[in-house]
Length: 472
Image 1 (tube, rainbow, N blue to C red):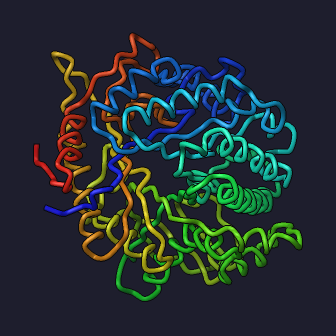
Image 2: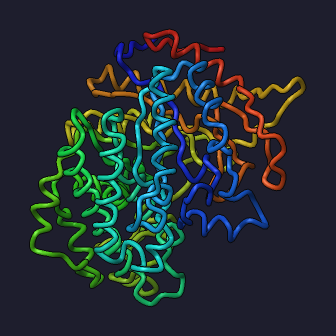
């Protein structure tokens, strides 16, 4: 049994576009997430209804209270607050999130709010090409200030961007056209402007929210070498550096690390900057680090050759990645089991990354996403027997407990997700929730909320207080 701090935030998580629905109700504008989900409406569920939290928020938060949650991490939809991204404020959007926040607090649940979770107002794409223009960063700063001014008296934990480091590698999330000729230059400029936006939001939070704490939320990367060949060891390190560590360094120190700047120069994609940027970036000191953890990766060196000459940028970041010295390739780790959707399950990796980030940045950490996606089935008597999820959660909580014993300061654990929600590419076929939402991709059905076996198990873990890990 591992002992957790008395004030440990046992929580669960969601995001606006995946759970809310009501995509155009009460003045909300369209987002990039909406736009992309509608393109797949003939194949899977979209954001129009999702889990319909917009109309079920009271009963859903009552279920969170029954579960015993100490914290709920969720996101605010920028387009619900400012429908076109940089124009008029929508009072109905403010009203909705005020009701949610007040209900959470009345149930003894700490709100942890993400400002931006993959859902850029689509009007900013049409106006600025989104994050490619610096104006988008200033629009985000204004939106963040609106949130701090309206909710900061009650919300003290804030996250800026969810998984900027992952989002940047996915063309759809950034609304980058597949056939654009200067794609990588656009991507680098967007990434930079999001760093500026992050820094502006951090500064605004510290100026506006009394006792407010704000952080990044990264998709964490732990990479093992395929063999003990030093080239494979370096390839694994490069994968961590280029996938996540460069962004953590940028958030923490306000400048790109040397290896990343060399890469940008070699590719001739160094983003445009302004003289005042150094002060903006270096002055934005985070209070903690939030990380999302699902799996580890394994890499082997892939030397440059005649077919892949040094300096050539290879598409497909998850397959073969470029470095100034050559390439590396992601391989399957035969020592690990995988979920039915292919993610390799590795609780030890969570202990590794918690120790790594703590030793490098000496900032408190909170896990804001960790969970198992599976095709859960509703059994007789409206039961969902998800022992596989219980085992997954238990092993990862044990890894957190071990990291705490190692000396890592961990603030909390927010399981992904509190209830079944819209998976970006699998709809409702892939379910993460502790609570089953009775709908399919093609049929909204009755949207009934049905606690799974994992709900009851996690409730006992939270009630244990000391973090006792129960077997059933």
